[in-house]
Image (tube, rainbow, N blue to C red; front, side, top):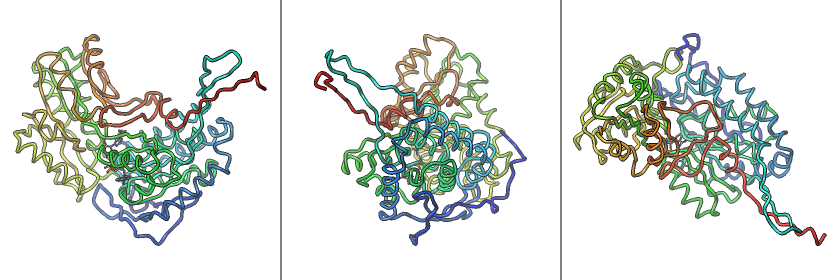
Length: 497
Ligand code: NAD
């Protein structure tokens, strides 16, 4: 995706300021959160840290707009028109959005421009198109009665997003919630707030009523928790770590027994059988699977489980694919490798690698940080061998470009190793034997299984979401729209009319 014409000067990017509430930016005298550029660690700007009072102001605005603007009660096609215009405006402002993403998040400008922005617009367009396609169920009941199931929006949905892929994550949360007729108050990660604020501004330009989509900035344990606990938030849609997901689920249970959709962490396997059809293609899937976005993707394929007879040639091919990786500022159109988001995250990666080495793991490729960068944390793609199921790097989500390697002899052994005791987000299976592929697909407990590929396609109809502690419910697909609605059972005895 290299595109030198996308080079830009990061100091020229103008940053949205404040929260976005009731259709406008609003400033407060709250404490400011400093936001840094991951490429070089320089200070980028500030956003206010919303107090519970500001959260209450945003939720009250959303509820008022939801009740009075007609957003929830109009025909779904009307909402679809606004959402479609929003998607068009996102496409039209692609360069600006890609630059905002490249200065504060880990996304290289060329990738943000060619993929994140169009995918964000596409996700919103998908839910716009789906808005009037859900039918209800008629029930088999007495001849003089009619029974049916009616769907309704919840009201105000509280959404919280992580720092990786901020634009896409915003569209995955807002697309279904808004298409279903809800209002949304969204808290983006405090590390990457700016592109989400700009999306909210574009929604107003597209004709969305003021107050239907609001953005509050702030830390998780204060602003995020105040949003989850607010009495007028009727449903929660969260993407982030498994640990935070558990805290949110517990908060939601204690403050109103609210439904939650949780998209959480992963430790996904790439299972490679001896009969793999194309070793070079598979090596590409392995290399990209654990290095894309610097390994900071929930779906990262970070555990290679490979048949012992092809382990060496496959690893040689993977090493070849990794050899050319170079770090660079995310505002250079030729950069394709991402830095680690923050110092804290960089330290966590190093400590998990050290603990893994102390338990016997051996670094067979990479290790440490590139040393020719301007203070950004660009971790070298790293491969660890001599690991077992109890090695920290196998057990825990590391969120960096680190691959562990385990080998097997028999199909059953490989499939068993591919399963994980904690996570079940995705799995890659590489084989030319369809029976083997389907046996593995059935037996690996994961919300998504990719066969002879690794990574999502642009087909928004295919949902994403994890099993086990990787989550509850789905983003994207029809399932995400259904999860933004509540269902009411109706029974009419028409003989009495
Ligand atoms: P995180 O859990 O630390 O934070 C996510 C969001 O939650 C942030 O906005 C944060 O401010 C907020 N938050 C933190 N504590 C909170 C609390 N107690 N109450 C309410 N909100 C709180 O995650 P992160 O480090 O930003 O993102 C990386 C994680 O996200 C990884 O685990 C990754 O796997 C996961 N992720 C999952 C998916 C998916 O679709 N399954 C997609 C992207 C990222």
